[in-house]
Length: 515
Image 1 (cartoon, rainbow, N blue to C red):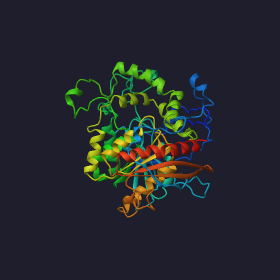
Image 2 (cartoon, rainbow, N blue to C red):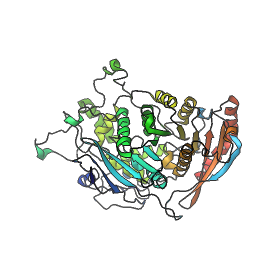
Image 3 (cartoon, rainbow, N blue to C red):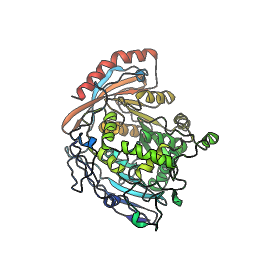
Image 4 (spheres, one colour):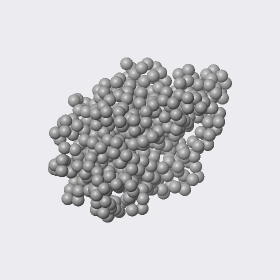
């Protein structure tokens, strides 16, 4: 096994929410994606990132639309921070139990506590397919392994708050799916000009994957849910080498559940964070071979000429900094959340020459072999523990989807957080980390330790729902959210009580937290 080290400083950064972007040359960026000769793993400590960090390389040319946003602050959610819909129709709230709990803040050094150091690594899974991941707390021998899977368009960087905090007493891993984050291709899968042919005309910074013929290693490559669940399986078997608690947000939640359904022996529990309940539009060739034959192309390389033209047009729009900001605008409910690092890392990924073609492959990849509902059923049949943690103000995966999961797996604890949007682990990491720690300890103790929020209660008497206001300190200021725990008992009366008793209280809390 060959061990290599590399630098991991990001190539661009948003400073104090100002839209000042700077860029290193492509060759400098490429150093973050080292080329592997032998099968191996490379690791280095991640360079600490500061919100005031600046990079004085050549200025990045930003579209005029983006320049107009130089004073832009990212906002999201609804005007009052609270959404009422049919997702409320699952249980009543035990008002007597609606008390306040102080939960730990993040270990930022202000209280003498420091986060676990993060190592940034590459693992060569197959020739030309190098997987990036981050890890923390591997020195915690005997502690549980927790693996985080990212949503679409982001990577392991989206879980830095979990790595630093949970890595203090767990072995924590975060993975970049192939075709995303820093697990993008290291070589052009379908070059426009072959090696040795008119080398002087080759442009190392132009988009990859837009040639007429795929390289041998990429002829069957398609960035699909089936590829990702295989990637997770081999990563656990070859790198972690122990069963894991697997946590996924959005697309990552979909893949986490799919993986658990296919490999229950490798999973100790699944946590879904606003998991998308579907992925892919084209039929799966194994599940529906006849229908799949009607679609001549399904995400493989090379891209057809019509798809190449379509991808170039769409990619120009969605990779624009203004478009990325608008997306973040939608999915974060808390107006005060600092998304500078997330924004800059997404921008960095879009600048990689393999990004556009990878996006096309992902969008046209076939569906998984089994559906989300089928995966839930399999997990339940195999006694795989499931926990649900959903941000209530998610505009995409609305809480009704979490309700549907809860109905199919009624024994699964369901925590609904408000105000919080599509990415609760990044928006309210203090709360998610608190709930995750408690749930894992509950399972590790075989149930002798209570579930989070039920510590001082007789859980048998609170099988419908309870509410808690969770308060924490962030950057010297108090913040709070309302967390509702739903058990397995559901009745029409409970639903009515939920509307009457909780609406006003949660709206007032949400408004207070955003002042």
